[in-house]
Amino acid sequence: MSTKNIDKPYVIIPNAIVRNNGILNISKTIYTSLAMSLNINQTRLFQQTSINGLLNVVGYNQRSENQTLVRKGLVELENLNIINMYSDFSLTKQIEPISLKGNTIFFVQFNKDYVMSKEFTDNFSDEELDKELINNYGLTYTTVYMDDAVKLFTFQSKHNKANILSLYLMAISRALIGSMGKFYSTETIESITKYANVNEKTAITYIRALFKAKLLFKLTMREITKKTGEIRDHNVYSR
Image 1 (spheres, rainbow, N blue to C red):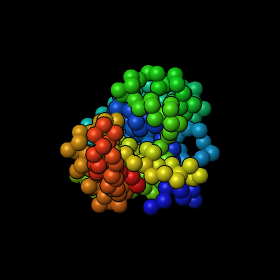
Image 2: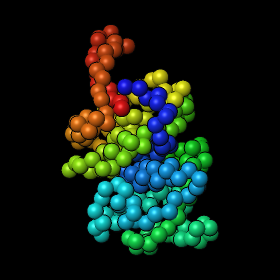
Image 3: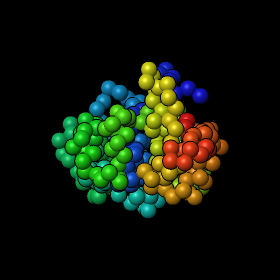
């Protein structure tokens, strides 16, 4: 399973969002869906949508509780300055997401440079955000194939889609595409659960669902522990 196919369309999600348990999973889901839609039309620097439009993309019913959930995610994304929201095409009339109705059209502007900056990561503690991986190893973003993202949003499951998406992004966050993509993403369950806001028992259930959907696979790796010299097997996950 290669992670190097640059001929397949893909979307980039900053690891400052992916590897961050200080951001709600619904916010990560909304950002991913917006980035997908933006990627389809790359001539624009913004995305036009509505709350109900977002619900359609991520496969949620247009119930009032789901509208409230999306509104909460949009509020967080705007408060963190990850996005700005406007009521007009020229992006001059900024609006508050808390006041949006389900079918109200709005325009989203992405603040990608800010999200990729140290100024943004400094908003979070070391416990919330994996600053070591981002700063020391230069893994600043996660690449998601568009086909896989669509599959994530459309496959039928009884599980929480926002949590599954957050877990999936974590599992593949080290798997790069292109010339840098010679390494698989090898995330341990401990790392996945920490930053995906999912407990281990639930994560195992979600991982099985992603196995069934052929979106993840498991590798069992053997290593020698430094302290005791014992040989230990552990599972890692990737696309």
